[in-house]
Length: 247
Ligand code: PGA
Image 1 (cartoon, rainbow, N blue to C red):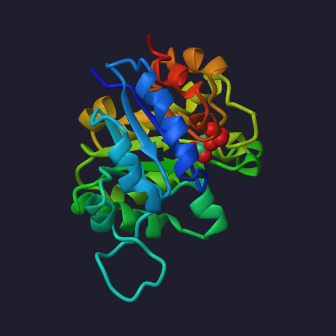
Image 2: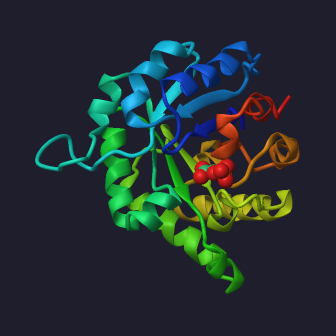
């Protein structure tokens, strides 16, 4: 199947130039597994700074972009602008965008479609809340999110899906490898039934939610986990060990 392991660091709204220089030092020192693709999602204003500091082998991502190329959208950033300052990726549909900023499945789908059309690669995030999990709605929720996404994505080549249970994000409560694998595996089955066998075989599905150096290896050993989207730990030296979890 040959899905290349892919680890994203999601710095969220953290860092300044001095702190970024320190984090980058640990990434440059690595060493990082050359068989793992690494992407750093930094605040948009730091993209060109981060791009200038990181080796070309590490990708840089924005954490949001709007659904059209330009216009009267005060405060928004277009994918072409992210590209222009050095990003090759954008993270879209993160649960913080969904929950804090009220982004809907369709808005996220439109953003994904436009970012792909502009030539960015996309990490598209999905995941259920604790309440949804406890009422046995996990599959219903992630299938709905995938189904809306699939209305907007015609070619999945440049898409990575990040399955991030909301209850595991920033809480220190990681999904167990079995819980994560179970969802990844039904997502793959959903892709067979609703997209194609080829996309199911090739689409990388990351796990996100309190990934640390301590739990990364076991999660990485699961058949359908193709990488991670890492928040808190991506700001720390242990991110190197997470990148190398497949070794
Ligand atoms: P966390 O965040 O690793 O801090 O839980 C993950 C994410 O929000 O992508």
